[in-house]
Image (cartoon, rainbow, N blue to C red):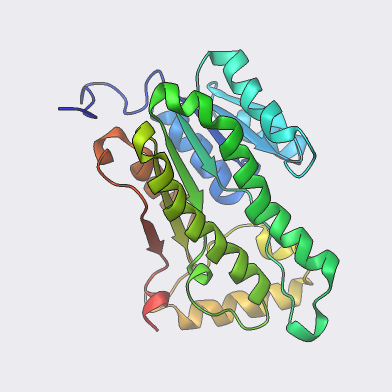
Length: 257
């Protein structure tokens, strides 16, 4: 049957995967999980030292430091993967930026930063990857957020950027279906990562936000990056060859509240 793989092999043996935001959190866990499943992985991110630490986790992970908001960088990242391994099978658009930006504090620079990283960069990277994904009949997995489809008071522009990414997921799925390229998204809830700290919030505020989030999650805890990575692999797996245009929420039941 089309899309089946040999169950005696690692699921992604021979495949090449590009993971953005691979220097920490979900991106690092995803790069490690794909490599453990047999893939060759190009980890992309801004911080060279963090990417080096990710690459040290497995010999099949290579680091490619790049700011995907820079003109030409998305195409360079795709070219780096293809030059190294000759193909591209899976693109994981994980890199994103969180911004706590109440409406009365919103400014053009802040809004543009969020949209550039969370919407524009994934779009340009997917466009650059298309020729190779057509060849491999590959998959795109976008990493959204539970706040892509539920309100986020005080962080509405972040939520709006993730809502845009979810709509792009559905639109690309229809657009690319004739090429047999599948496009799905994972929408994690609050997950242990450096996102809150990286947004510039002080440590005390980060601790308070984490405590508040945990209190609202029905299963009583924040997520672990490895849990998100597990589902990203499942969305990219050939065994899910009839699944496209879907957004899977992984948030301990937060979406239900």
